[in-house]
Image 1: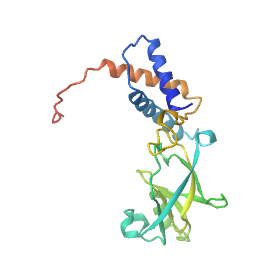
Image 2 (image 1 turned 180 degrees about the vertical axis):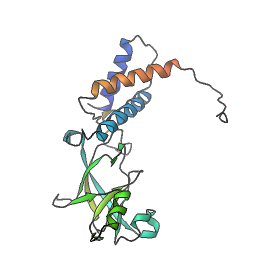
Image 3 (image 1 turned 135 degrees about the horizontal axis):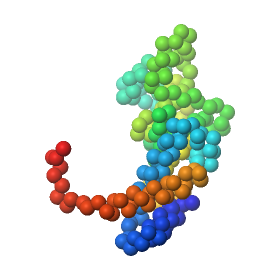
Image 4 (image 1 turned 90 degrees about the vertical axis):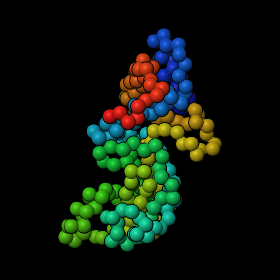
Length: 213
């Protein structure tokens, strides 16, 4: 299913409820994406989507070396080499385990790079015999990929993302894919419809008091 088809499905459900006021495709998809992200995040926390391979798409990510001073991640200061993606991954879903990335590897898939988070990294460093030269990857809250203790300049990343890639010049926004778990599809669309209906019923203040608490 693509974005345009998803928006049409929501509009059809709204029409079934006798809602004649037109809602823009942008608004419909914004709500739909928000709802889908919430549902998927919950399922990732329950470890129920990691084997749903159809949801993950492989992206080729270019990296460049940065120095420890400009890195901004204190936990990397003593690491040998720090590579950072030139661009962030877009439309990630974040959950308790981090970003919705399942695997990072070299281009021919012969080497899989181990994932870590900052808390786990600090625990590892305190362990006797910890190998401080072993490569690992980390993804920050903005979606940038870090590969540490390696000079690798390009990796394959298996990503679960929900949204539109505005930099995709080959595929118009409405023709881009919108992938959600089939078992969650009905709940996601019904919830999006309810949120859109609720938003239409709540009056907006044209002159809000921004200083009010």
